[in-house]
Image (cartoon, rainbow, N blue to C red; front, side):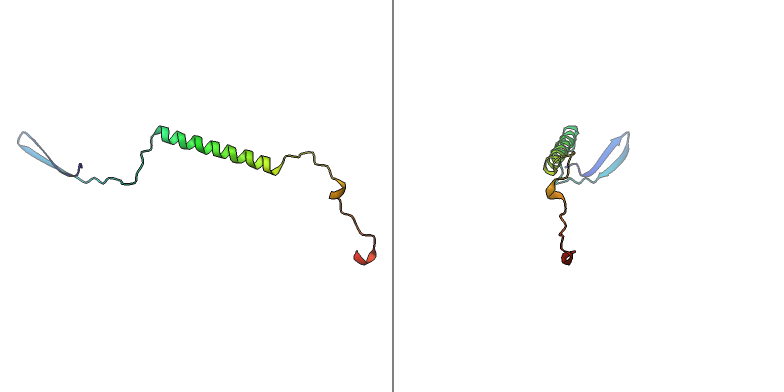
Length: 80
C-alpha cells in the first residue's frame, strides 16, 4: 500500500510528500493483446452476421415474374 506521508531529508532540509492512492477492485488491464483480441472478435462477429444476413435473405438477382405472382382480375363486374 503506497499511501502515506513520505519524508526526504538531505543536507538538513526536510521535504514531505503526502500520497493518496486508490486501488481499483474491478479493473482489468488493457494492453495491446487485449485490444487486438477485442478488435479481431468484433470483425469476426460482424463478418459472420453479414454472411448470415446474405444467406437468409436470398440472393436471386434475376427474379422474373411467374404466373403465380401476377394478379388475376375477376371478370365479374360485381367484384370490380
